[in-house]
Image (tube, rainbow, N blue to C red):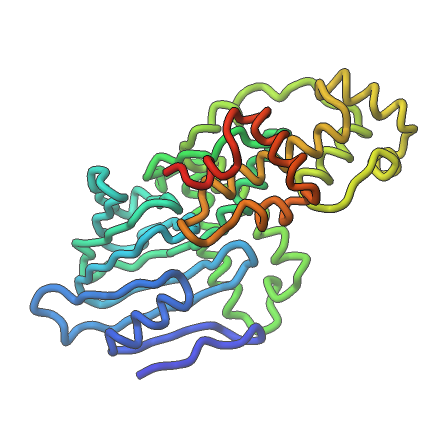
Length: 329
């Protein structure tokens, strides 16, 4: 039995006893994967999937009714699993396997092959696909500066208390509300706020390479004029900026803005724009799967119109050419 995932006006659910059909739907919702039913209980296989689309996040309630195995290569997204019943084992690349329970959630790296096995027959999980770039942008917003490198997450987090439990409860609520016709999550204002809350909450609920910086005492408050400009540039770095436009955004004179940036950021406003763009280019070059990106395309995407000047600035900033970054493992 199967039901087609619903439109934005109604619930998005799917039920099937076909392994092939389940694999296809999971690949459409999440990533390209193949399911393998294990053990002697294949007749108990029933895939149930309910999903909610929250922009940068896809939240799903997934179960199979029997033991399964699956794997997928470099999904390109962060993937978070919150077991509601049962558990399973997961391995990232060649790392030691992690065994999940209802007390521990797992977060998968976007750039590593994932293998899931020993999925218990009664296992049911909240599976969340999270846009990698959206996570990085939220982290930049929380830190108030561009990322020097991609964050590295520890593979598990505590679901029994504190922010981990809160984050898990918010994902479950999103699925419940998504089933309500004309509910709050059908309002873009509410959906957008929950999307941002889940992104920021994930960064506060998990352990990663920037966690200490997030928990450190906040730096001295920057003037409102500087913050208006930095917030805009971090959010939309590829837009065409010039000094006059940035001063208009800051609502101060150009000279006042330049002096404030020099004192509180350590560079000029336009140098800050260039720094944010260079960091975005470097992150995309380092994380793009082989053969999917070119230096030219990435440079244009992030607002660099003059490729020769871009290449000079990139090499001066990072000590290597953009092509070397793209080719590095």
